[in-house]
Length: 112
Length: 114
Image (cartoon, rainbow over all chains, first blue to last red; front, side, top):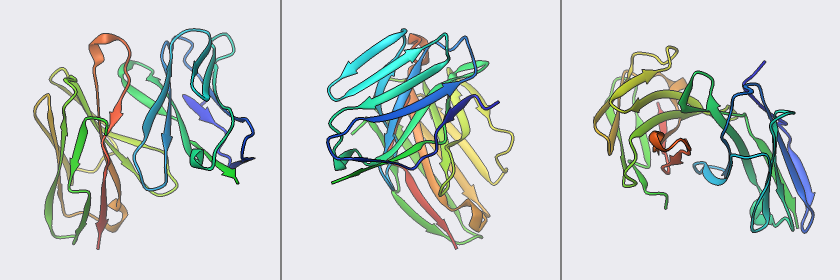
């Protein structure tokens, strides 16, 4: 089982809709979870960090963590074409919290 | 602007050349990382320097050689590369002692090996 798994997509949503991105992880001991956004040809940008069960909201973005079910999700409300990017989920690597294990990413396209 | 800079931003080199990639972080972090990202592939961790300890991915060929002279600077020395080494090379840094482990990436170096 991969440490971090994401739906590879691609995912398309119309402008103004809610985009839902999901990530599951295998290490029950994981305490930190991160979402990165990567535009084509650019480097990953940290957009959300979540450490506790429940929801964390930042503007149009909401991260949801469920440790019992070992999943973390990212909701993007009122999606904009500028949200079109690949979204990467990351958790500290098993055996070494100094490293992150990244999912393969979900490509999101927001259609105008 | 994340506080992590990389130079050069683009590099084209022949298979017999020797070149170096440079990374500098201005965030006061104590860990730095090199990643490789090939087209349509996930991020691949190459090397980690954390608290003066080096960790490397055993699958990285010896033609890649890292150097970390201090906590703010990281180099990746390249020699006799192969065309399959063409990729985006990303540097990242984090503060591992705070328990949060967030990593911040530089803009990357787009490497093309001809």
